[in-house]
Image (cartoon, rainbow, N blue to C red; front, side, top):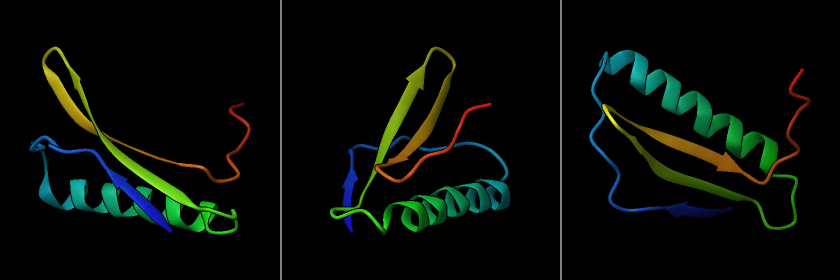
Length: 67
């Protein structure tokens, strides 16, 4: 598994338990659905918008229909 972590990542503000649970869930899903690829990749990047910051976690996994 190839990990790409863009630095610097921003500090996040919110309920620590919920932030941890959401981040773990997103990372777990990214690993689970990209592991069958020949070269699985997970990317973590900062999202910075006026008045808000966050993380984006993406992978090259199978994906799903957006309906």
